[in-house]
Length: 127
Image 1: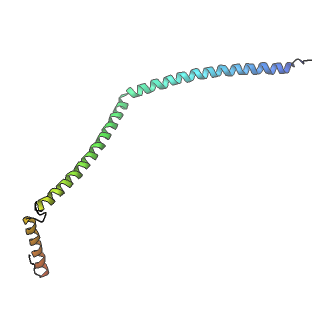
Image 2 (image 1 turned 30 degrees about the horizontal axis):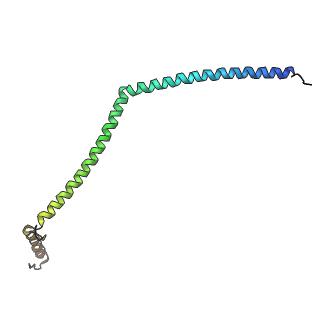
Image 3 (image 1 turned 45 degrees about the vertical axis):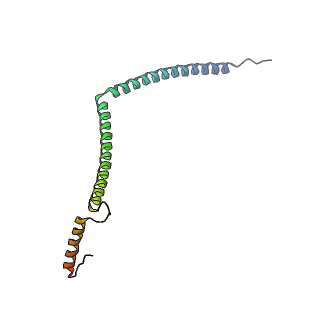
């Protein structure tokens, strides 16, 4: 024989069904609210992107980036120019054929040697 469920059990089942129904309704409301909020966020982001201050901020970021790139390029060019000047100075001081010091550099070194000899009270000689 099957026992019929007691009235208290039936009441608990009905109460649980009512609570489940209420929870499902609240979930549906929460989903609708979430959908509206997501739409509001999308609209706010779109307005923010088109706002002049956001455009100015983006333009400023581009300018800073461009300035940093230009500074790096200028430093590289400066280093290259300094190296080229050093090389040009070196080649101007050397004879093109023998790569020995040229006449101008020889005279400069001779003057320095004579001045140093005078200061020390010594002699200087050229071979």
